[in-house]
Image (cartoon, rainbow, N blue to C red; front, side):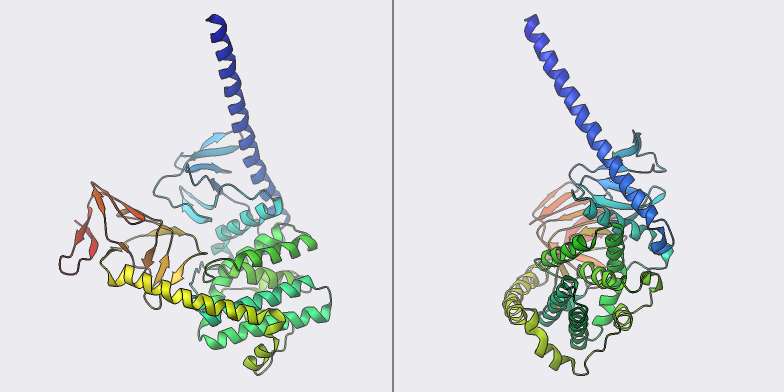
Length: 431
């Protein structure tokens, strides 16, 4: 009996020791990640004439555990060795973003971080740029480019990206100039099909595109690594269900990478008023054809054009059916409408779907507001002006926890869900 107890005690001590070592190793890794980006940001201070290194929150999305490189003013974060740790309050949405929280402006990044060091630095630097973005004179714009979910918008974006892939893969200067010219030709023709598209695309590129370019520079990839990264990134991007909120991660980093060889520090010339397309055309000394349609028709097959057009025609037919289903689900049939007061949202920008002029369907979204928390895992319709969101009718109502098909709503005191007996629709009401 004594011998068995002794053996059990030894096993427990071994497990406890191993567990402690794992925690210590993980904390050391987090501290290493912070130090990596601190060193690289310091080396690249000339890029924006400032040191981008600042407060970072690394968040485990499953447990909401935080790891930070700075303390907070509310004392939620406790120092553990070289880092700080705590639990992110439930009302704060988790996303890769910049947030103002407990006395600081933070770069929030979800764990796990990329295993590859260059990819890790790229991600951290991207979000740190968003932290400094306002002080650098850039406003935060996250415009939706719904034309990039339509057939022709997608076709000519894909053709532009295929041309950019060939641009960065060739070492022949004449071929590079040709592919670059073709990429910008596809872009300009896309704009001609959708009036106003140049403005909305530019706003997102000034926000996410410049941030991603910053990340790609601070990642310190060499020429071979950069080429492989951009090609792989485009190929991965093209498998996304939609392009409307994520295309800027692909375009500006590549144009910027190509330009920095002849115009170092070009990014410091960019302001919130810059039209990036016109800037690049001038900086690369590109002469675009007068007849954009005729030229695109002649060159598109150099970039797998026939296959792209065929694929997009097939997708368009499927999309029409899906849009009809969503309109029935969130507009025609009874549904619950939740009006926003002071909302904050997190979502996956890769799979959203615009529904004509009715708004955009977000398959996965989390909304926090004065009224509580809405978590959606099976679709919700966000209004065009972001003042309300619609989900299917409630199925369960247990105290302050209300749920329906793929969604849950945790209400705070003073709010309730009521039904309009005439229409069958529900709405969130404030007592």
